[in-house]
Every structure is written in structure tokens, then in C-alpha cells.
Image (cartoon, rainbow, N blue to C red; front, side, top):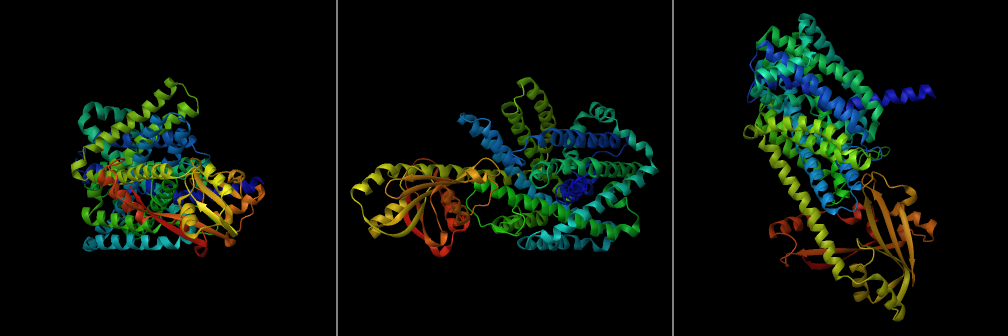
Length: 625
């Protein structure tokens, strides 16, 4: 049994290397280069600055990743799940009854999610570009091919998403194991040439850097933060691997390899300042350059894959929590529910990533756009985690304030340093974030207004059933199931069916689907049946925000409560509203038009809930919105 547990832990740890640490593991490709050579405000190449920067990088890795995420944030899981949307759902549970606070929390969570999307667009672009730019070192004559090769690699990556990552995923872990091993070896080789560089482990060098040149040190934070891009993945991917394998991989391999490589690059730059133009590739002997470029490209593809998969995951969570319209979701694995493919998200990401590659042209230029998205997400996570510490864990205000205050001090410093890069490209993630934030907030608000409008216009279910008992229409054999978001009102499709067809089915089921703010709804609580007079039934099906909706499967659970339903012998009636801009209430006209556009483009309920298409009847109506 013990051997089995060890084997399982080893397998999960290896898999976590391939999924969780791709982004942070490829940061050495560009971080030091951005700080000393390519950034908008390069740091002068003198010994005190090199030691100060290395000290900042080391303690950033410790404070942000090891302390903030690994030691504390990873404890704030939502029933084993992590990530900004899971954290948002968890914090809302801790503020039940305070609608104002819940709205503020929701806004903060959405902002964090928007920054994640911006990060997801920039990460593949900067990572792949920085890997392929090794050609400039290995064979300068091939420099004109860097952009076309990068675009080709990215196109192939997005094209392969529909096939799933099962097959490729088998190789992710071993490739990243080789990658981190090589990072460490290259770093050690350089450090041995100049062992004094290890003195930068002392935080006094970072403090001295700030004391001697405070403005330069503050500006340099905009590049230093690149060393922790991807730290959020440690928390976001908890549901896939669990906390222990992620911590084991971080402390056992990833952190030592990163520190050794950064310090190796520092030792190289200290010996030869000219190498600051690309210190990562110049660490390697000439004969290793082409194999290293291939391995680096594979590592950045893996890092990009993790970000793309994360975008699919967070999109589905946002969709099921009501922040995005219904989208087509394909499952690419029969054995793993979490492996999904969302075509609309995939092609939108591809267009954005390729536009960034073409627009910026190099990883150096993209570096200015990178930090804002990362630090914005980190800020949102710190605040939401503080709410969990106080409201759910029961920490005192002083204890919560001290820890979260420390996190926020670090986050705000990094965010402030990156704000300075707004005109050098930092505006890109801000624009991306604002656009996605507007879309998500408009969809959430519009849906609430629409449902409220439909609820106000609907008839109460109880009196309707009493009327049916007094003046019964013709009842025909079979079961009719009507989907509605309002459990107490008569579905519009039911009224239309009765009005036009003058009949009702023998059994009428009024069905409402609820998505709760937990990852997975317990199977024993999935279905709830309420028996009503005159052969009417009210059914509620509950899902968590990471559950896969499948009504035909879950309606079978109703049999345990006396209602046997067979999807192939049931007619599913769905109301299909056609929205018109009429009333001058609720939202501004431009937001209404956005909502109507999103509403019209939404995936059908048939596909979302896996209904048999030949058993679905759609009844339309116009709604003045």
C-alpha cells in the first residue's frame, strides 16, 4: 500500500511538472534579459546592481511563490479546487447575506479573471518568441525566420487543441523534468566560474539596492516580477494534482533549478556584461545551442498549453457561474472530465496571441506588456484570500491584516512598477482586461434584468395548477419537461404550448438547473423532486461550477424520489426569447446591444445540457428588453 502511494505521488509530481510549472519554468528565458538589456529602463551593468537584482529575484521567489502561494493561498481551496473563480465562489460563501459586499467581491474576482485572460494571451506570445529567438545567438543569419517560426509553432499549438492533450500530456512531465535539470546544470556550471555570486542570496543586497538607487530599484521591479509569472498556476491547478505533489515539485526541483539558473546568468553577466543581451542562451556551450533551442521551444509550448487549458477551465467556470454566455464545450478525454476544448475561446486566444506576436515583434517588446496582467491577478488574489482568512478561517482582523498587508505591499509595489510601462506596451493587458470585464459584467447584469423581467410577467405556478384542476384541458399521453430559471413561475413555453396546442401532456415536469458556488455538487443532492397536484412535478437539478451538466443522465436520479424519467420518452420544451431594445430602463443602450449580441450568439440549451436533439421543442417569444 505504501509503495502504491509513493508511486501515485511520484506520478502526480511528474505530471504537475508538465502542467503547473511550465510558465514559471520558462521565465529564465527572458527575465534577466528584460532587466539588464531589453527593457524600457535597463539597469546599468555594475556589480552592485547585479547583486541587488539577483537578491530581489531570489526573495521574490521566496515571498511570492513559497510564502504567499504555497504556504497560505493553497490552503484556501474550495473543496480541493483552486484558481481565481474558485476563490471568488468561496469568498461569496463567507459573506452570505451581505449583498453589497458580495457585489464588490464579484467585481474584484471578475477583474482577477480578466487579468488571467490577458496573461493567457501574452504568455504564449512572449514564451515562444523568447525560445525561438535563440536562433539569433546560434545562427544570426536565421534571425528573419524568428517571427514566421514563432507564428507557425503557435498556429500548430492552437490547431491541436481540438484533439486534446492526452497523448501529448504523457510527455509533458519528462520534458519539463529534463528542462529543469538542464536549467540547474547550466546555472551550476556558470556559478562555479564565479562562486561569489551566491552572496546575493543575502537580502541585504536587495535592501542596499533600494537605499542607494530607490527610483532605479523601483522601476526594476517591473522586470523582476517576471520571475514569478505562472505562480498563480500552483493554486489554480490544485484540483488536478492536489497540494502535496505541487509542493514537492516546487521545493524538490523547480525552486532550486530556477535559483541556480538565475544566479548562473548573473555570474555570466558579471564576468562579461556583453552577455546581458541574451544571458540564458549564452550560458550554454556553442554545440548545445540548437538542441537547447528545440528543448526551450518544447518547454514554452508546454507552458502555453497550460495557460490555454487554464483559459478553457476558467471560461467554463465563469459560464456556469453566470458571467459568460453559453459556449460550445467539447470533451477531449473519456477518462478525465477536466480536459475540455472550447472552440470560441481557442480561436479568440489564437487571434489575440498572433496579433501580439506580429504587433510587438520580439519578446523584449512584449516584456513591457507582461507584468501588469500578472500583478493585477496577484492583487485580486491577495484581497480575496484575506476575506477567506477572516470570514471562513476565523482569523482575527489583526492577524489577517498583518499577513494580507504584507502580501499587498509586495503586490502593489510590483503593480506600481509595471504601471510605469503603460505607454511602452502595458496598455495592452489593461485594454484586454477592460474589454473582457465589460463583456462579463454586461452579461451578468443583462441576464439578471432579463430573468427579473420574465419573472414579473409570468404567472405563479400554484394558482396555475389550481386553475388546471378546475378547468382541465385535454391531457395527452407522455411526459413534457419545461426548463425555466424560475422555480415558482409558470414557464413561458408551457403557456405558449397550452395556448396554441390546447393540450397538456399527462405528466408535466417543471425543471430548474442551479449552479452552486462549490466545485462539485454531491451526487446525493443532485436531484430534488417536489410532487405537485394534478400530475405536475417540480424538479431541481444542482451542479457545481466544475461539474459537467448532463440532464438525461441526472434525471434518472429522480426515480429514487418517485419520478421515473426516460430522456428518450420525454419531450423537452425550451423557451427561446428574441430580445428587442425597447424599455429605457436597466442598462445603457450600448450595453443592451452588447448583451443582445451575446445572447444571440450563445450556445443552445440543447447542447449545454446534452439533451437529445430529436426530443427538444423550442417555443419562441419576443421580449422588449
